[in-house]
Amino acid sequence: MIPFCKDQNIALTPYSALAGGRLSKRPGETSKRLEQDAYAKCKYDATAEADGRIIARVAELAAWRGVSMTEISLAWLLTKVTAPVVGATKFSHVEGAAKAVDLELTQDEIDYLEELYVPHTLVGVMAQNGKQKAGNVV
Image (tube, rainbow, N blue to C red; front, side, top):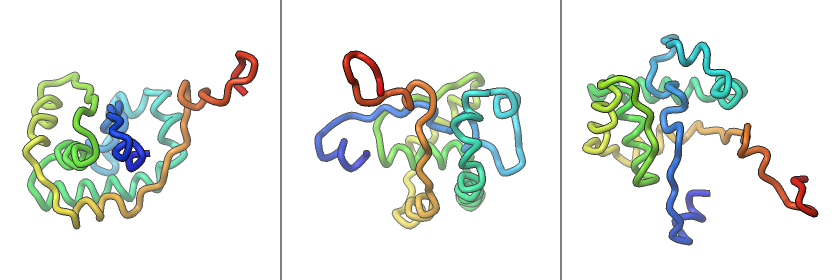
């Protein structure tokens, strides 16, 4: 999708830029949101094993660079889009997002993060989008 949008000069504005907090937490860490967000569980539980390998790489690069996982995750995303939607409920969330703007990942780091990616199946409203037939979604 991203190559097509770039080719056609179509802007992308991803939401859930940190995968409901998953890309901000080290493997094994949890939060109230990770435990209780049913919609995020629907989106991410099916690929949790594959995602866990990427999350481990985000944690590894963050430790190596001496920055937060949020900074690594958003710095990567900023190599793809210019305006991700990032939720913030704490000042530290805003700080991490702001710091990511100045963090430049090398191409090797970008490749390392992307190497194991597995596409996610659409869920919720996005999954309901389909071909229209006589006013009904089929």
